[in-house]
Length: 609
Image 1 (cartoon, rainbow, N blue to C red):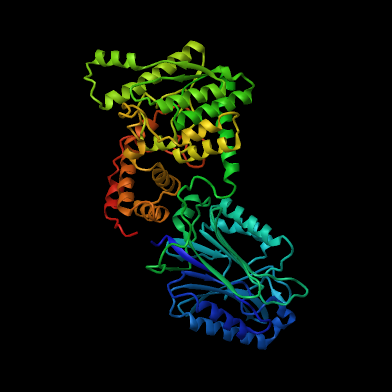
Image 2: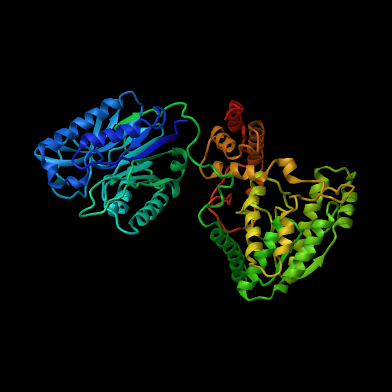
């Protein structure tokens, strides 16, 4: 895949005023990187002669040795299909210039000067032998620029450089450090990469340099659209690490749309082994402080409902409570909304509507949840009404789609009519996973006055309800919530088995929600092709799910995703409270879209990811 680009960040140990020793150290590090190891290798500014050289930078002898060391590195790397970026000093019509040399297959293809240098190194007035920082290079589908500036000035310079439309900004530096400065630099770079929608790679030299008048410490870090791909600190030896950048992710997140023609474009290396980046099974949940994210999510969910109530003057809520995960999450958000508005919880009318498939276990949890949240409880059985409806339409009682959907539509009618009676608002319970797969009954659980779960996947709802239980954000319900989390997901539209257990388990029908949520994330957020989603899923679920099963469920996902758009096209109101969702304001496709263009590619994908 020419959108997966492998980058090695290298900080070599230096010896002041000894380019030969610096080259020898770089050679030693490169010997540990196989030829297929990377597409781009980045070393710091002045990697061949440290800033400690001071006034010696004007020495013809030192400049000549730097030239020899660069020639030796050029010769060393001529068999590798890799961009090598290394910092050195060169003489430019009587001036000493710090520059990043760009090598490829033994050729010096460019010199890009660095700035913010101390005397006697020049910072301006370069000859035409040097290229500006806005010069773009390309490797496969990824374009990059080289920004040799002081790390204190990277924010404004990165913002300017991002206007070239580049995907990766490489910052080779050699800045002194102070207590806390490395943490500040990392934080700034990570925020910049997210706000600009680009990757940022910092390689800062300093290992082995003089300790006066500054303190140096080498470090390297690579960030992609706010995610950490790699970080390392050097002590007294050289360091290196290698990561894979994903140009598809960057292209989907990049803010600037400008285009600058690359000076040089090369193909990435083929058949690189493995994938050098983490692929998490639940990409919706951030790794950093997930608890804070879940708490924010719950508050946004509740506040959006509270705002709808305040803006419409409605003070009562009506919702069906089945004892399942979705209705539980909706009830918790409703309780929080009432608390935020200062209304009594009795203004929530929680309705149990036992039907043909209701199990004793879920029914008991629904009653316990309604009692412990201190809301108004109503029970309205739908069995007699549905049986009468079957007689009216001449239904035979077969367990077909009409048998199941009639129950869901009857429940929707009960809730809507009850809301009319009390002047309330029907709170929808459907989640993002069901929206994506169309696993809801049109004009049944698909319909409500306002949806509170629709931006949250089934997997995330489990995390959210679990967090609410753990932190006891709603008093007195934690034990019931944990029992609900242990119950299989089911629409409960078919009768229980002989033991009274749930017969109809959703994940037996569709496959694991965690897998479909994974597909949804990469399909909607990053626009991944089927082959790449399959590749990533095989890595994420390795050891749990087999490739043929993943491929089968991915095909099912595409079919259901396209077929279910007509339900999303007329979905109830909801607030867009997550970064990835299918609210019409964010995502729209035709309701009669044929998924063959996706399925045909998937058919040709092998099973050996």
